[in-house]
Length: 280
Image 1: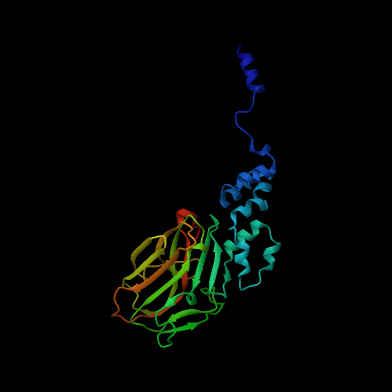
Image 2 (image 1 turned 135 degrees about the horizontal axis):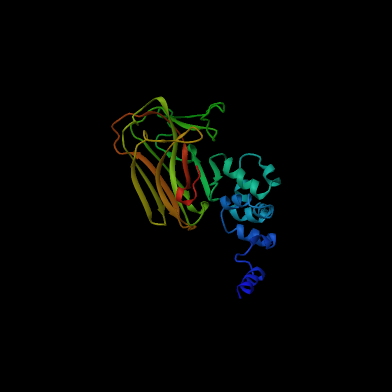
């Protein structure tokens, strides 16, 4: 009796299904429903998995549906991307942000999730007294510097008593159903003053979405970025994907009784929160 049972086990169906016996197209469809990180991990499993996980069909799903239109808005020649595989395009847009819209925005993908990210240049911001040379001046940073800017020019603060920076943008250019965070990207000269322990009020509002986030921040309590710049988080919001919603970000000092100097503003960055696949 036991012999017959053991023989039945040997001749019966396997205890677990072997996905590798499926056609490559089916395996690709499965990987396209996972994440870029999962697809890269699958490449180490077997040659069949590698071929499926690196297929254009998979990485086309990870790229934003409008990525070609975004690339077409680039200020630089990116014809080489047209000759790349979809995976190479994805990795390039993750590792090498591109300038778009007359070099006033920088676009890149969050590497872990494929969500769209933007760095709005200082020229895209509304800076009170920003066009008055006495208070602010526009400078170019040498490319040889470790902290060179992505943009042709940045805003350097000579001095002000009243500090107010803001920006607006349509949330339709962001990835829908995504939690985002906004950051001021800046640096402080060695001679900077007026920013140490003084509080600033940051607010992030989605007009149309009805969400408002306010908090107190200190520019002296920053995070050092991989690109050599500093950043502070200004607030978070959830982008539902409404076509008519507008994002408004503001940063201003709570009181205007102290002179401030020595700040350089590169821009305001919008990228997914860590919970949404942030890989910074």
